[in-house]
Length: 231
Image (cartoon, rainbow, N blue to C red):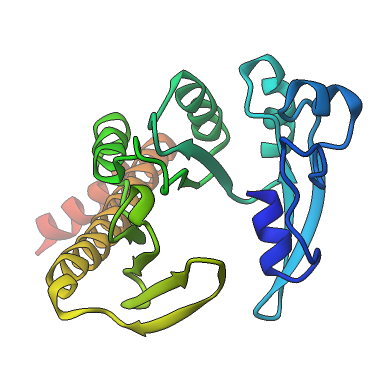
């Protein structure tokens, strides 16, 4: 993921590979030996006029302390899922830390071109584990060897790539996908609306509780009662 972000933003001209031991973030000898991150790496990319500061953390539970440290200084968490397996034990553990620190989460599914990848099943697992608040903003038209395009629900666009990758071809969403994308989009708006109402009710209840604790509501009721009696 780090290599893809750096490559697409123009920071590097060629993507490294873990097997080739030439990735930007895994440069320590121990990381190249094990084939995965051991230490966190800080880097940034610029995209659409915005600077994005990113901390690439180890995914292994053995080094979860690095992820917890990073969560304390970041705005959003991205949890990377292998499309062949879906949510794993490490996913659940890391998600608990995001909940404790109140961080929004983006689930990002990779390995979409793997024969064993089942995106719809992964999405179903995420919803079972974390509820209806899990809403896809992009979904692939096909997975496995045929993966070459996806639908962006927010932009209502189709992104397609050629055999060699590179810049995508952006088109209007196909007619046969319009209904599915619209349902997802409406669901997201609905969930956002419900969440806003729940937050407003929560704040209202907290205010009422504070007013009762100070005696303000009780005194006001007495005052109103005396006025009514005089009337």
